[in-house]
Image 1 (cartoon, rainbow, N blue to C red):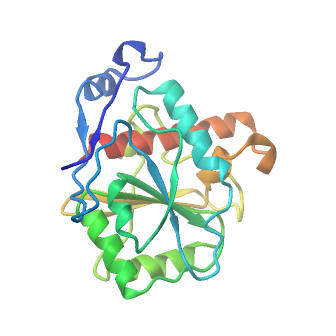
Image 2: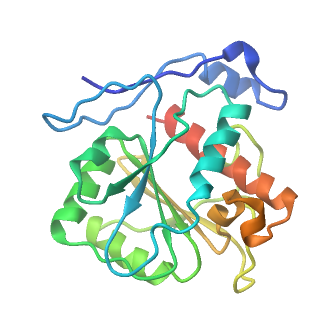
Length: 241
């Protein structure tokens, strides 16, 4: 059985949601992941997975980030999303129960062959991974993804890409949230058979913008931008099976 994800409360759409989104949200979204035997599960609302990994990187940092993103999404978009998220090992078959996975950190990540294969199968069968570089993660996560997809490359998305125009409009592409080195923010993607399976934000750190406001002293307007971009990523995943 495939997990089913319902988009609800169509009549309570807030102002600012585009007519295109309103039309898309009239449709039930079906996750195309095929869970392995013994792991099939039906959801009344879908959950987000935060990926746990080995190697010393802090996969667990900013635990409030996803909670705040979920709350913002529930408030502004009629998607039936669970308020709780789960921490899931990269190599666990439980990963197949989640349509949307998140990974972040500042340091090293190590994955073995079995973990790489599990993540590859998850993504090839309908899963989606959002990678947020929380400064210092870039060289390690790129190496890890190369192990998952040796023959694929990240491509930088243009500002015209649909991911920047789902619910909220970002005419210049991904917004800049944290300065770090002061370089321009970039959004990269990896595709399989024409479907985006990974979105990777670099030199922006959306997760810090999602976190509790007193944690990183991010201005309120930047926090709102980060949350809106997060909503776009969630809606893109559910409307591009």
